[in-house]
Each structure stands twice: as structure tokens, then as C-alpha cells.
Image 1 (cartoon, one colour):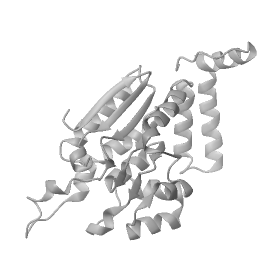
Image 2 (cartoon, rainbow, N blue to C red; image 1 turned 45 degrees about the vertical axis):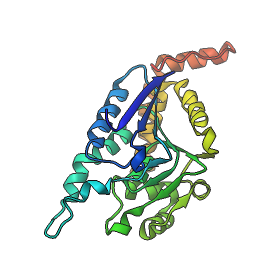
Image 3 (tube, helix red, strand yellow; image 1 turned 30 degrees about the vertical axis):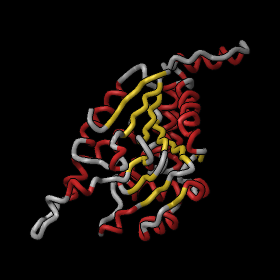
Image 4 (cartoon, one colour; image 1 turned 60 degrees about the vertical axis):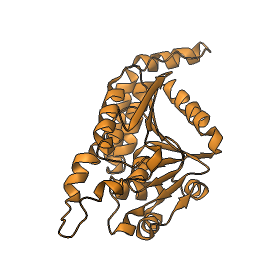
Length: 262
């Protein structure tokens, strides 16, 4: 692959956006490679947790505007809606609907669609140098790739309005204070801190994690009565797994459970 590197160790797949010379901006080759990689690790039975990060000093600066130089000439009519549906929407949907937890290790700037990518993940661990920018308004566009869906749910409508309408950068400490990220660590500790969280998740019952992720996602759109019914169904499903039996018996026997993810 030209834009991505992939490594798998200890049941954790790490996907690294590998265009550090352009702050990991998304070019035409990125989206098909990224979605294929996501599909592959999603289907890999050895992978229980997925980490997404960037090479060098950035997470991702979003769309590579250099790719547009040849197009943006007088008379050009962009069709950005169709482009989104083809290039970006598929990986947002895959991250949000896959059973496996996805962690963004945000090592630097996450701007535009790069910010949307970080928001789409289930958790965000940020370097002290991380910066989040909903930069779309600065080029006369609207936030996309599910930013307008995720951001209000993470930080509230008022803060989301602020960040999207002004396009101002949000540093790591502010991001932590407003609930945009789960953790901020020194830059040199980002890899180890992310690995610690990923290892912990990988050791837990996979079906329970998947069902929990599904319940939390759908809770944003359901009534309490509907959610109670969904919880009942999910709990019935979880109760029939090997890991539930193992967890209970391990507790009763006062030993560490050996979960298999099934």
C-alpha cells in the first residue's frame, strides 16, 4: 500500500496513515486503501482492537488540496457530495458499525476530514501536541464525514457550533476538558499509553464489547423503552457466550478469567 502501513501484534491491529511529508493528507489513493484495510482487520479473527494513527508529526490534515490544483480553474464545477459518498462515507460507516473497538492515537494535528476520522473512532488518546480543527469553513465548506453527527454528541451542541462555525484550533488540554478526547499524554508516551488501553480491551470479552458498542451507538437515536428492549436482547445474547460463563466461574474460583472473544 502507498498511503498506509499495517501491523498486527497481541490481537491489536495498528493502521498508520503514512504520508508524513504532507501531514498525512488524504489523496485519491488513500480511501480505497483505507477501506480495504479496515475490512481486512474487521474480518481477521486474530484482531480484537484497532488503532489508527499518523506517521510523523500529524494525525491527518484532511483532504490533500494539492490534488485539486488541476481541477480548480475557471469553469470547474465540483460535485463534492458524490465524492464524499464514494471516498469518505464508507470508512466512517465501517468504523462506527464494526464490532471491534477502534482507538484514534492522535499524535498531532487532526484537521478537516482528519478531525472527522478521529471523531469517528470509539476512543481518542491524544498527544500533548494534538490539535483538532474543523477547518471546513475556511474554504467555504461544511463539516463532513460525520463530524456534524459526532461532534455534538461528544461535546454538546453549543461547543460544536463554536468549533464548526469558527474553525478555530482546539489544543489537547481543551479537547480533554470538553470531552473531545479520553486521555492526553506526553508525546513520547502516546504509543505506550495507547498500547496499554488497546491491550486491556483486547483481553476483555469480545462479544460483550461488540454488543456494548452497538447499544451505546443506537442509544443516541432511541427512546428509553426501545433501549430497554435492546438491552434485554443484547444481554440474552451475551449470557449465552463462552466468555460470560468463563467470567462468572473465574470470579467464583478466584482466578483470572481467560476470555476467548466468543
